[in-house]
Length: 223
Picture 1 (cartoon, rainbow, N blue to C red):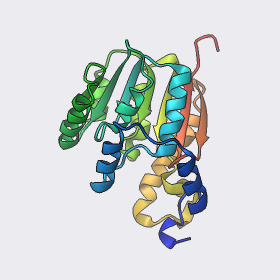
Picture 2 (tube, one colour; picture 1 turned 30 degrees about the vertical axis):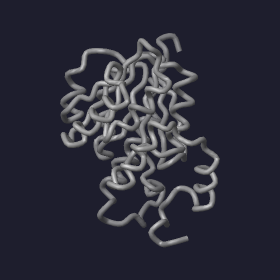
Picture 3 (cartoon, one colour; picture 1 turned 90 degrees about the vertical axis):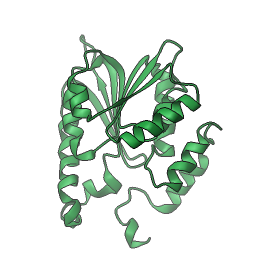
């Protein structure tokens, strides 16, 4: 295994096998995947997409909040399992990405269901006064704990918070051998995972899918 992959969660062969076993993306999503690769823009991984689409079809959320839009790829993926009366609100701080996400959503005729909100997620979240069935966190990793704390009042009982990329190529499990320049971020993610896993309001599970996915189910009032 190459040295630059020494922190990855699974080895090359397993990762390749998993990706080859997954169904091909819908034709209308393929151009976005190619664009993301060409311009080095991170989007939701194939394994994570398959997991969330399965959860979405089982759970059937109507109101979805996304923190981190990028080019609108994940929001468009969510729209594949969204009911006709459902909606997605997605927050993005980078205005160039906001513009591109809106263009992609309009191009795919999903603007009636997907809204991109421009702004810093912490500020936007503080001013939201509605509840959601599903919240997807995929933005600045060092801010995950702040995002989650804001989401506590925004997620419905029986709702699901999904935090993506929480294992950071496996570095959260590596202790003292983490490169110094990444140690602060890794420590924040480690703190975030432990905080969520020990939160009695949720049933949570940490999965080594993609770059690490943390699923947090908000218990019903009677649970």
